Length: 414
Image (cartoon, rainbow, N blue to C red; front, side, top):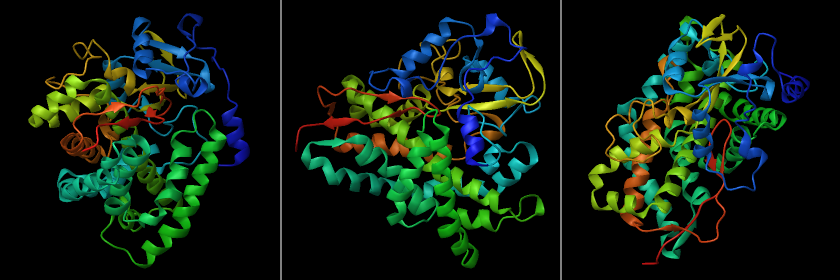
């Protein structure tokens, strides 16, 4: 992957291929808040508007791609490995190279997952849950007496980052600020793919210099050593695969939960009656964690069409990209009753697409759920009544992931 190729990728522009009928085209930019960052958007209300139009349409943005808006259609695509693949899962589609096993389909993908699965199982997550609670409380200790915090910077970024760095990746905590800079640039580059590429190269340099040689020389019982010394399908893992696989774990672990926590905290700050519901009945917290994950799905990624298929009357051709918006599927009334409402007693909220579906179901789903549950439990125990600092302009930015830019909170001291 060269910088020249990435510049061409970045300038892919407005594209409608000949096989797409004019009636299927709709100008939709899923990076919309990156273009209008001074406006206070409700990202989910914006995605909700898509349900007023066709279930499937073609956007000419970012090289051109299909958009599917309904839960059942996303689920069908995730499950159809014959016609849809993950070798390109970003829009615009990236140049060759990138996130290794995340871009693999079929046997190679499953072989990699067999190496990684033990480190992300419910049993593995349960072993470090008590320490995650300790981390959450230590972070709260730092600001509770002040009666205020900037939630994203002081809690949402730090809790999952410490968990991933110390207990999953087992990397030096002192490296966290350095890595977070590159993770932020990768995850939140918007549609500036030159910035994405440059950050990715910096992250790869860190892995190649600081991680791979050390784990090769002194392997341990950790996931990075398992990747480096693994033999998926009986063959050693190639260097570029090691870089890609470790990059997936770093970016996924240090970004996605951050976005979910920030948006969940914003919702609770704006809805005191639901805060009280959880404070007075903490037994609802596991269901509340599932509902927050369902309602505020944050990922909008891609799939590539592998083989021509007519999809709900539209000509999907091999090579076409499809936007898989879990944000849109989460608020689909055809699947969830009154989907926009946060309901901690909802019965089917664990059947959602927040973590995707099928072979590429999110590897870290048990970690993410545990972190959401622990946040709700420990935060509401210590700070049951809080609000957004008056006068704050809230910005939930969108793109590949949705996230709060910042979230200043306050509460009564003592």
